[in-house]
Each structure stands twice: as C-alpha cells, then as structure tokens.
Figure 1 (cartoon, rainbow, N blue to C red):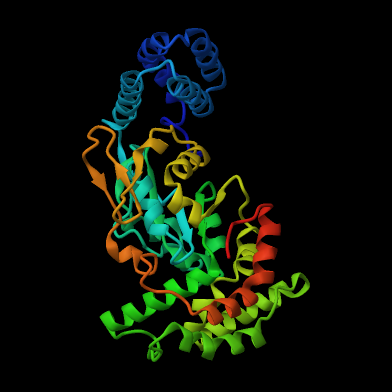
Figure 2 (figure 1 turned 90 degrees about the vertical axis):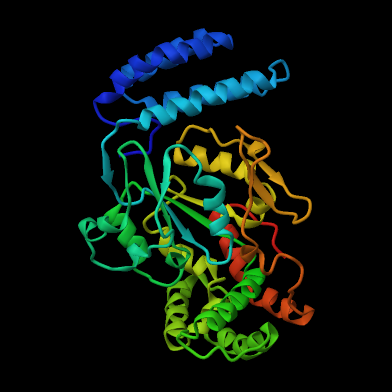
Amino acid sequence: MSISVFCGGARQVRMVACRWRKLRRIMFGFGLSALAVVILRMATETFDTSQASHQLQHDLEQKLRSPENSNSDSLRWREDLWEELIQSCQGKKKLRQLPKIIGVGVEKCGTHALVHYLYRHPLIRTTRPLELGMFNRAGGRASDFLHRVPEVEENAFTMEKTPAYFNFNRAVPANIKNLVPDAKLLLLLCDPVDRVLSDFFHEWVMFNITHRDRVQFKYKSVDQYVHDYLPRIQQAIGDFDQKNALLQEDRVFDLMRKDYLSHIITTGFYALHLQRWFKYFNETNLMVIDSERMLQDPGNVIEEVQEFLKLPKVLLKEDYVKKEDSGYFCYKNWKDENKLDCLPSAKRRTRNGNKSLPPDVTSKLQGLFLSHNEALFKMLGRKFKWK
C-alpha cells in the first residue's frame, strides 16, 4: 500500500466522484477548471487519486502564491483543503496499523523538532510515547506490536520515531523492511562534531536524573571524555575505508558492546551505518535531511517532507516563524496567528550558546570525522555545510 491522499482500494473512484463537486468549485474560483478536468479524468482512469491530487494541489498552491492572489484567497483554499482531509477521516473505520512513517534517527539531531513541526498534518497520527523501539526486536511479527500503537482511521498514517534505530541495533533495517515493506523513513543527520557535544550532555543529564545508566558516567566535562575516548576509537576504527567498511562497522558495534559510552562518538560515523540501511531502502523510501537546514528553514523542509510522503501539502513554509528572543522556529497556527507552539527549552541545551567544545577538541574531532563525512557525501551525492 502506497501512502496516498485518500483511502485506498476500490473506493477511490467513488471518492473522486463525491469530491468532484467541491474541488470543481474551488478550482473554478481560481481559473483552473481546464486543468482540473484533465487531472480528475486521469485519476478516474487510473484508479489512483494520490498522484493526480498531489499534482492538482501543487498547481493550486503555485497559483495562490502568485502576486495577483490575496491572502483571503489563500486562506480560503487552505480551509477548504484542510476541511476536505478532516472529512475524509470522519466516519472511517479505525484500526491498528504498524507505523508507515518512521523516524529512524539520528540521536541529538533534531528528531523531536521534526515531529513537532510535522505531526499537525490532518492525516498523521503519532504514537504515545513517540519512541516505542518496536523494530529493535528481531524475528517479530506485526501482531506482536499492534497493541502498542493507537487505533487510527484507515486513511490516516501512524508515525513513530526512535532515534536509536539508526545505530544501536544492526537488525532494525531488515526488521522494518519485513514488517512494513512500504514504510517511509525519515533520517536527520547533523554535524557529527556538534552531535558529540549534544550527546555528551544528554548522557550526563540522564545519568543525573535516573542514576541507572549502564556505566557510571564519570566525566565532568566533554573535553575529558574526548581526551579519553578519541585515541581508542582512532585505533579501532580510523579513517573510512571502503574496502574494509564492513569490518569497521563490526568494530563499531564491538566497541559499543564493550563500552556503551563510545557511541557518543561512533554514532557520527554515518557512512558506516548508512551502508546497512541502503541494503533495504533507497531515496524513494528513505529521506535524508540535513538537521541544520531543518532548524534554520523548517518551513521549506516540512513542505519537502510532505512531498516525499506523498501527502497533500497543507503545512506551508509560512507556518513556521522565528522567535526573536530564542532564535528558534515555532509553529504558527494558520487559523489563529496569535498561537505559537515552540519547542521546549530542554531540547535546546547545547544550542543556546552556553556550552561549546574547546577549539583543540573541535579540531581533533573534525580530523576524526573528515574521511567519514566525505564518504557520506559521496553516498548521498550532496554535501552538507558542516564544519
């Protein structure tokens, strides 16, 4: 089952017919009647509303954003489309389904922010808690996990995110592919040097809260930690080596089994981990997102995510505004511009400028990650603007 705008199966043709009258009213109002006839005819002939509806929505959006259209036109269009999606869920049978939208990582790269910006979509339902870790169990069946997900409308999509999926369990990619072969995966990557700083303080805070970490967290500063761990990791892993990448991956997991805290650094060997995921997924079902870009320009990124998920684009870049006092983006309710929903301050521990790496530590980590970053950029066919 592909992710589509409306319900799947034989009902699609009937749904096209029942929605035609309302869509025609909207489209005639914006002078797109001829285009609408062609697109709707394509939808009824192919029994697939997802691509046609997505293209129609795209064309309407482009026209509405042109200078000759007023804000009231744009608001009316969004109200109609939003209401259409809500109505498409009303009265539908509810069922439990494994997540079709899965955030697979990376820890401390803004995975919570992504969900915070995305979950308001009328067709997305999130799990409670968000991080279920259900795909960590090898050999499981769908029936083993359904009790852990909410009942949702049959044309809605359940979303779950567990950042540890990316690098803590080698079996996860195969588990997801076996259990949810048509899942769409979202992967956030951030500068691995900055990630070390963020993950260090995360582990430190969690230890002080729970006192139940797998090892005693004895380091009082990040430079102490890096000074101790960097030589061991350099010796065990070293520069990225394509010929021995699988052996290097083995060493990463062996090191983490023996010493849990090594993951603060080794998680940043993205290319070694990503090669495992690319055995089962590609750019059609795994979207790699530059975390820094998402935090600096969430509106455009969320629009691109909706396109990747093949969901109607009702969350627009205008919905995300920066708060001057914090420098972070918040979601602005398009029905009430006075309502802002911002990330909790706990999610900004190392981005508020109060914590940083010493210059010599930064330089050493940059040297460690250099070849691994270059390998990653080659795998993705694009570069990120990291240090």
